[in-house]
Length: 490
Image 1 (spheres, rainbow, N blue to C red):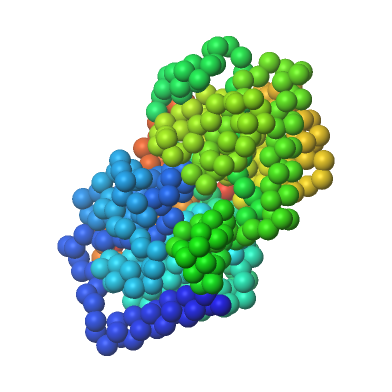
Image 2 (cartoon, rainbow, N blue to C red; image 1 turned 180 degrees about the vertical axis):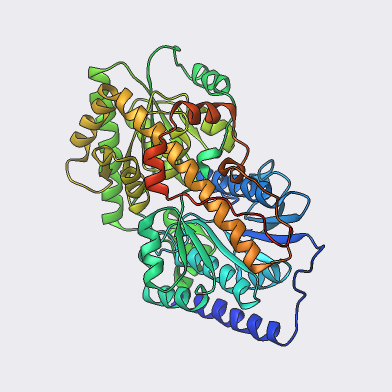
């Protein structure tokens, strides 16, 4: 009921914003003005994946439109936890009670770029998807740029699906896989296939990661196996006034409290499934160490993963834990990339390690890792977090990562080059959308190469592109557009 009230509140504000705009409220973008864009996302909770992908979207948009012609703002839930992130973008605090904030903040900008990966789904929290739909819908209601960038779509509750259909029909969504584009297309929402945006992220040099591993007992020789666990079974988060009252008055529901009036799923079945998952990960690593030399570490890509990392560490005799509460995104990805191979339930642990060619496997709770492994053509390296005999199956996959590491690594690197071209296509599409929405905005003069639509590539990425061009496969997979020709407004 609380989620329905939140959806109704946001819907009402969108309708109000539309009426006010029609009656002349607000000032549209004018030639000569800087184009003010608001980046709506789930930042400021030390979710490394969310922060990395938004950081790279900002870099990409800045390169395409020109830093002197735009003014970028990005949402954060904590200035402290995003200090040093997002370049020159202005950070604005997203409050827990967000509907009035969305209305006022969107009104101050000329467009919205929604950049949460899990943009259209009920798996995690209806409130999060409501915020994404609200941000896009508010911009559309005011005839402003309304773009979803690198979005994932999955099952939505009927009320959310209806809201999405009503308020995102004038937006343009660039998804990160074809499955998501199909789901949105069925709702009548314009969508084009793209990819995630974390491919171009460059962490601290490997010397940093190796130093931290040495400090935690690594001998510099033994292969490092990184396990990135989560709690797969306590989603979605739902609002509950009754639980919130009990929590704040008596401390009840402490273990399932997320924030404010939001609570994770809980109960004996949830606890039992979680124990089976952690035990399976630990059992597989123990078995693997009996057959292979390995230095296991646990990596928490989000602060919420700390509990699962500690549980895993305890079952494995106190292995090192590296988590995002103590390491920023530059540091944590550097440590991750010093691994020899990875088993992850975090999507972005896989994405940010693939650019370094590290063999990896996924244990997934939803379609994100499933879709990624399908892109890689490596579904044999994918397991479900709740499937039977998880430990035994994971033992075999760990053996495969060691035995077939060269083949796996080559396929991963080729996939990265394909994803970079897809990311460039997203940049081309974004430029076209800006041009249609604001024809008088001065864009770059051609001719341009497709790499000009990416953030500046690091030397390792550029070397990867040269070593693994994968031209034929990429052109078939991507259907890459030609960069737009010179436009009359430039």
